[in-house]
View: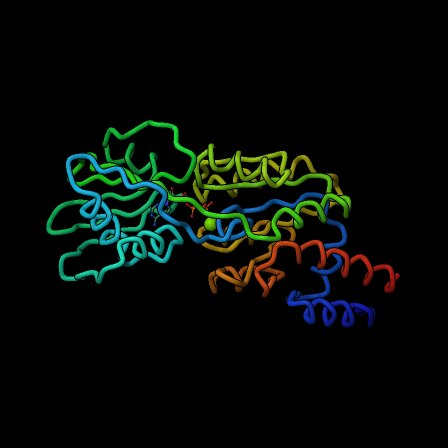
Length: 287
Ligand code: ADP
Ligand code: MG
């Protein structure tokens, strides 16, 4: 039977905005050895602002328009930022055959032209040669009918308590902290360094994230547990594979909240260490 203290633990967590879906997760949380984070929307706000617009042979306005139109149906944080930067209404009658390519970007027909908006991987897939300049930020390339039209440089910010979240987990004795992201290496390494995360894997497709998690499992002791924290946009499979899948409830998708074992309703990553403290206290009382 479940010791009474577990009900107290789940109740105490919920008062702090931490939803625990079962006492077994509370117990597993107390045994966490490795915490793996997604970057965008988990440690960073997931709200990108445009830093630079660099068109080739067209105007800045036209480049932003192509990007915003191609992104019109996407809910990805990058899409929202590009539509916001464009700022005007989008005429849906000019858009057809929209395809979102997970971990890459979007491809859509605009005024009969095939427009691709996304990262270097998408440009490679489309056989487009693009600017290889090393920029600090997330680079969104744009091509029309396989011709390079330029790029838009965007940047996200750390969540205010992200650094505290990492420090608290280190103080709580977590042995290994890892960050996984589909974003480029320059951005990923910068974020990890700022936060004090030692292990970082970047430019991963959603399927690569699951493979990486499998690899990380091998560095864990038999009794230790692995927690993954994500926002659910493209990472529901990783959430499901971890011993404890934790979702940020703020920007997080409904799919994430569904797939997660624990949901942080307040969108503060520092609540992960809070949840661990509650779980350890609960276990001490139970035994
Ligand atoms: P993560 O949450 O790890 O940053 P995603 O798998 O959601 O990663 O996306 C990885 C990368 O794929 C993004 O950094 C971006 O370069 C590209 N990408 C994904 N979706 C879009 C989109 N709608 N528009 C432009 N680029 C995108
Ligand atoms: Mg994501």
